[in-house]
Image (tube, rainbow, N blue to C red; front, side, top):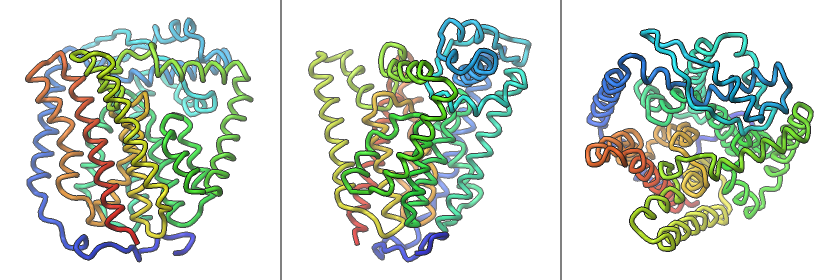
Length: 417
């Protein structure tokens, strides 16, 4: 294995190298389902109702950049000032409809606000459209970059399927910035399979935009004695924290940390809709005593964490496939364990899944669960009980997290060198 390309000598069981059965039924079903969802959106968007709610999270990023430009980075975390700015941010929608959206907070470190400063040169509508195009185009380009670097094929149809899925569509609709997590985790993985451990750690620092995505990955690196990776991460983290201190000072960094902590508490009222064990506890508490509900959830958290850490204790490495499977298992487990995890946090898994699919390792059943499972679960729960549709959807995504963890863990065991 060289430093600038991925080694194709990837040991795999011979039965895994056989051609997979045709997936035409899956492709047709996916297309029909996406067209159905598009039709539902158009019907429900009459008068621009849904349009006016677009870019909820982007509104917070945009206002934060405005505040940073006019008042300094430390004031970004002033809730009264955010209210004042966000009240004026109205999207221009078809039919002339304009309405104020929910006020959102900005929990990220001051250095990440820099990414949005150029967009404040335009009004909120045009900046959101440009941001959406950059995210969609950036994801497509990065998928091509990642799969080529891993030397696996990616057809045009499969590229569309990886992009046109609910986690990505939700990212675009809300104006989330999870593309940075996609690139950070993807480049971390590529550096790992090339044996460039310090560089992988440097890329891991990008995940600090959402530090809770590291709650299993960092312990895994620690117990597997990956000191060079941790050193690289430390350098990257120090640069990010130092830059944030220069921009926002100690008050700005402390306020961003306080807001991030509140995202795990009363600031966010959508806990029952999340794809984690916490969401399961909140839903079970509707029908069971709190002690039982949280007992089940805590047991699930412990079991999930234990499975992931045992995988890291096996001292993985050697083949690109084993690294990809390990990172997939770790991040899927993270989504289930972490306290704050909406379903669009699954987006960083896409390059890893695309790589495994290109290596003919991803079973049709797992791919179907990714492409069809989320929308079908939502439609089913909505038909049974519309008020519980979002809660049921979150639990369906938790099941998807656990499926990906269980499958990747089993594959790691079967591909052990």
